[in-house]
Image (cartoon, rainbow, N blue to C red; front, side, top):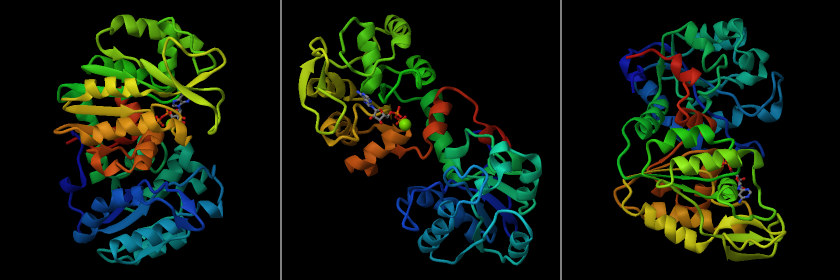
Length: 391
Ligand code: ADP
Ligand code: MG
């Protein structure tokens, strides 16, 4: 990675403003899933150990510039405090005299968490005045919020105009591993793409196609490709507008793209719909494809065996319905059992599916950035990354 990190600057005794991604699910006033808090620990612990004063900020949810008490970050402060084993003082706002006074009273090694930056309209507008106020709290800016780096907001991009800006360890790890996928993948490099729509992922498909040895397509996205091959897919989710594009991709990359050979069809879009496994040429009229079939899993597993690098985005079926989750979970098991492969999972629903499979800890890397990881893989420059200082 060509960006400076927190290791490249002297943080001792300094007020370090850290953008973390604590956009966590809250249930009954508690953090329901602390993955993102845990992911931020290496940077926070480093700052504490090096005698910095860590001032953490994040957004949570979509309060749209208003104070919404249910979207307070206070529960995240409690959880972080438990994980760090030290007090994390929670401040009731992210700017203003009360916050300034609390920050002025910090000692080296102290950690505070500011209230939700999106309680102020200036956050999402990237208002320079709001960014300047946030920035005035620190002497250095550390961005560790990879999951928010695709957004040019005041706390992810704006503040970098006022302070020396460097990457935290999570940001560094994400950029390193996803950057490697694009710049120097290990071969054979196999990518599995699925999820709802081809139109959401076209940039990613194009960018990966030139790099992979095989591209395995499942999920709703596969339906459009199956249509392009001339199959009837009944009531399946299909993007008719994208059929010509799918045809084009299939022509360009016949050797690389692999589609399902069998599918699980259902007589309705419901968890208890009647279902059966059929060949892709036998989808009955009025039925819809909700998962890949067992032959497809075997075929994909064959393609994956011996892979040295795997990137997976997009569930293979409607995994939210247990009956149609088997294809997705089976692929997770295949990845978990690969030997000597770097396995990388990106995308909000894909990560949720892999966690649900219980195999998350057997993957090399689970990206904490849904939208950010996809935009990076499309080849886009993320504003939150561009704002950091080059090495
Ligand atoms: P990610 O968030 O990992 O990038 P997407 O948002 O693109 O993934 O896609 C996830 C959604 O795709 C899930 O809600 C899942 O139900 C849906 N999906 C997968 N397969 C199908 C299918 N065959 N028909 C309809 N929806 C599907
Ligand atoms: Mg999604």
